[in-house]
Length: 146
Image (cartoon, rainbow, N blue to C red; front, side, top):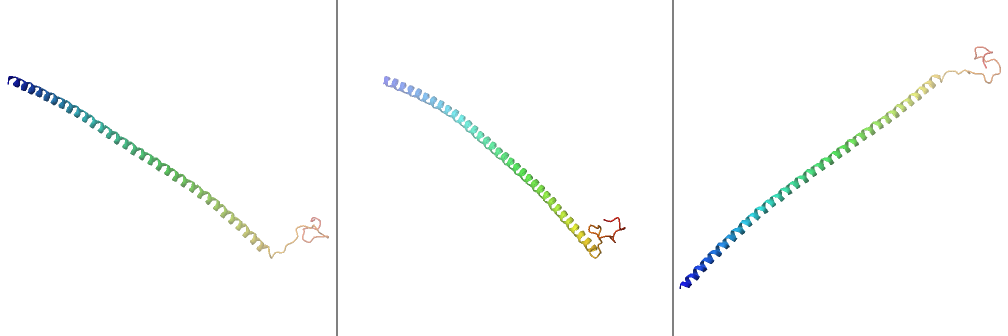
């Protein structure tokens, strides 16, 4: 019986010691697990923050690209407007010149027709005597005309 009590005491002591060791190992594992879990949470938060920063940078890049495209489109529109304005001005100058030239031609033709109309009924006297057979009655004097 005494041996049984000693065996039981030894078993109880060893079991208690084993349980304490197991409890310490479990606590160590839980502490390690909690540390690793906290480290994992920090890493996940860091990755999430990095992802947010990447998305923000990408969004900013897209916005900058769109603003640059808008600037190019605006410059193209301004250049096209300037070219159109210049073309219109040059075309207008050509049309004005043609209109002025046509008007001047019409005025000259009108003046010529008026002159013809004014001189149509007039008697025309010869101003030279290239083919003369003597005295020319239309000259001032008989000897000065030729």
